[in-house]
Length: 272
Ligand SMILES: [Fe+2]
Ligand SMILES: [Fe+2]
Image 1 (tube, rainbow, N blue to C red):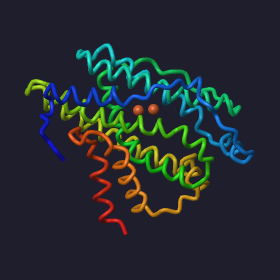
Image 2 (image 1 turned 180 degrees about the vertical axis):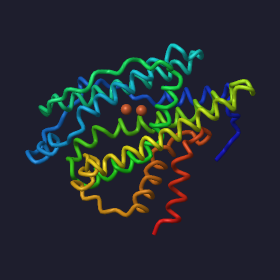
Image 3 (image 1 turned 90 degrees about the vertical axis):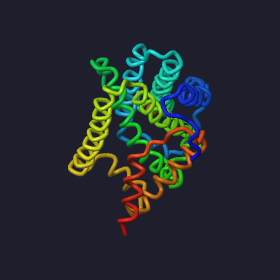
């Protein structure tokens, strides 16, 4: 990877903010065209139990980001983060448009209060996006290729997936830039906070998976209903391939999220 760029330099900031602003795609969910779908597909859409949670999560994500915006002291970074908040609110709006069009009733949980520590909330959100996106890209590919949902409908969410790729790329660079900008005496604290954020993220997901196992929740049912005949190693390989496919299209000088892909690569070597 060409590394003529110094992390924490004004050029680095310019690059990761400009990449983010330049690759934003303008569209209005209210004017999206929703295709006619057959009866079976409609039933399948209605039977998915995650609509309330999806809307609530996207809204809460937007709130965390928007709460951090006024605290960001740099004008260009602030502009990029405000745009990310807008995109997350738009994700919620897209799902709401879909559910309205196909007559799926949704009553998402009310928005949680604004976080008390906006910086920590923004950082934890960034780690969680990096973690989730790694797997979500592969699950999206499986859903797309399985024919479980009509292709015309899956297509509508392709821009959302690519926006998540932009978000994690932006966050990986924002975090490294911020760390480099701090005075030396503050850096250990920042490093520990970052490590703690990652560990908490993994812990939360492991707990989620255990709960899912206990409750046989929708993720498991979702896999079954999509007939996910795939070995763990093949799944991780797909995650790595989908991540590369989504992130490789951006400037190679930008830092990439590393933790989860590195663990996945190691696991691929160990798993049968
Ligand atoms: Fe989102
Ligand atoms: Fe996102």
